[in-house]
Amino acid sequence: MTNDMFPLLFQFREVVEGPGGWIAGIWCTGRALLEQSQLDDEHEWWLSSVDLGGLSVGASSPDAVRESFKVAFSEFVFDLSDDCESYGVFQSRLQSMLDSADASALDLWERSLHALRNNESANDDPAVSALPLVESDGFSPTLIVQRLDLREADGQDPAIRQSPSLNQVSAISRVRPAA
Image 1: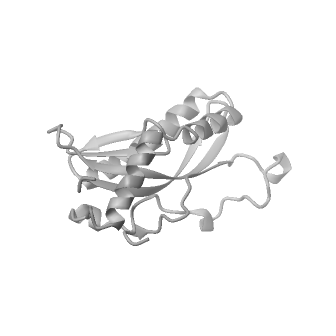
Image 2: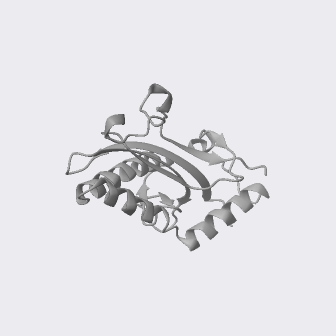
Image 3: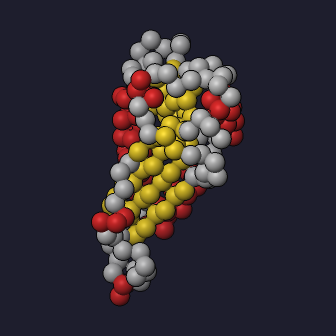
């Protein structure tokens, strides 16, 4: 495994509105692979989702590619919501995206993690090293899509309410090297 691949985890939250006036909150966690390109002079860094098939961006630095990745996720869910006539269709399509994990990307992510844990790879780029560390053992991608425009009288689950305690910052984190 080369030293230019970094297994990362991401966590994003977004709120979207569909064409029928429905509003949904999205919380998504997943795996991504940060790779330093040696073939493309314009985009030196690439960040690709393992769990959301097709979500991949390039930029000139690790910081820029992480920001582009978050923007690409937001644009994806905004475009998807615009194309869905109902909340149910939106929720279903978003879940199918998460269920379409790329097996070869997952294999690369796991090999990168193995190399990192066996000191065969090092996160020595300062922008990568500055990312918060998180545990990856037992990690599985998560998608929660919650309808926000309903009240209890309309069928909203009273256990699911928007409150400040549900606010979470979007984040991209590096994986802790030790098992």
